[in-house]
Length: 209
Image (cartoon, rainbow, N blue to C red; front, top):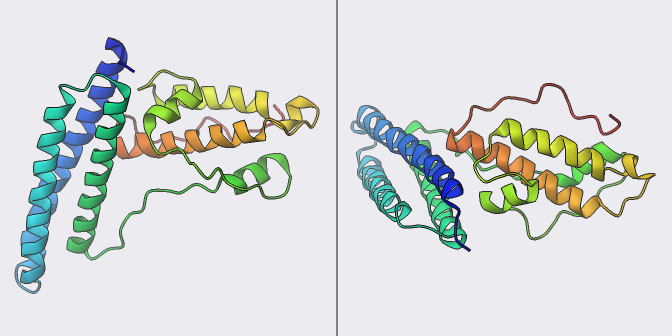
């Protein structure tokens, strides 16, 4: 499916920001590696140096491919490649700084739904939301929308789907679960991509509102 011009431009802008941010962080990691590893961990330094150089090479390739992507499937593949490169950078940076790796968040939707409805635990969706294109579509907002727009859509839809708003009818819970997962994915996605600083909603979501 082809992108509209507006959606493509937003997608490209978001990807370029992530690429630029990761390139800067990779160069910083190389500087830190030289300062901290050359004396006592020289063997590890050469491995890390090679790995970070591969990260930069991959970013150049992704940036080149970004100019020719015009459809959703190509965008999803390219975004997945960038996520893989981001994880590789984190692996090397963690080794340099001798810190635990940052893991991408896996949200427990069962716990969230339990807290929202006062009901027992529910099984999680086995398919999951694993790309931003799907997550934006589930939220019903345009690709590249801000976290504020995503949050506003989430609150509106969650109130409509919640059992309290439907005389206790729980038939919409699968859709609510899917939407919660998409919302949490986009919060993390926007934070990682630096397209918008993380900020909490104005007040906690209350399904009885």
